[in-house]
Length: 43
Length: 162
Image (cartoon, rainbow over all chains, first blue to last red; front, top):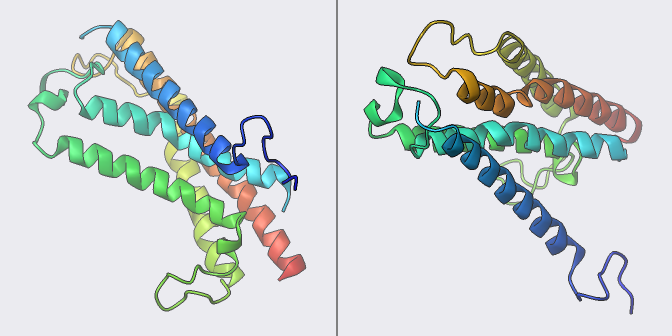
């Protein structure tokens, strides 16, 4: 039976897909801020 | 549930996030531009705990706005002592949310628009460090107005549907 929002190709539930995307976004944001702080050097 | 209110509630979480991340990285000792007495290395041992707690509190408060667009903002979850399973009175959510929106707008609007006024204090961030600090804190200016908008949507919905 087809579940609305269910990804047929990856067999992944839509909720876990959303959570994973958000986790990746948080990780990318953290890396970007950390990198900016490091690249601008010590004061 | 209107789509825009749901997106606005989710946006409040993202508004508070960059400053929370910056704060934790600062607490971990990454170069944030603070020197001398402002340098976390010269601060108290509980500095990191403090910034992590402050960030958790900030995200926790931002998460409360999700209650205005989720069923747990209308009927309290069963695991909450005393009020679990009971209907949330509209005013019990609208009043604190409105006061929170006002407080957040009053707090962040001047800070973000006036900058952090490093001035001539050599111990505060300058140049690129000040820009990074500002970029991370700037989204906070939207938190109050977004919460106000979500609160209005909640009030209208509760008035229509109870």
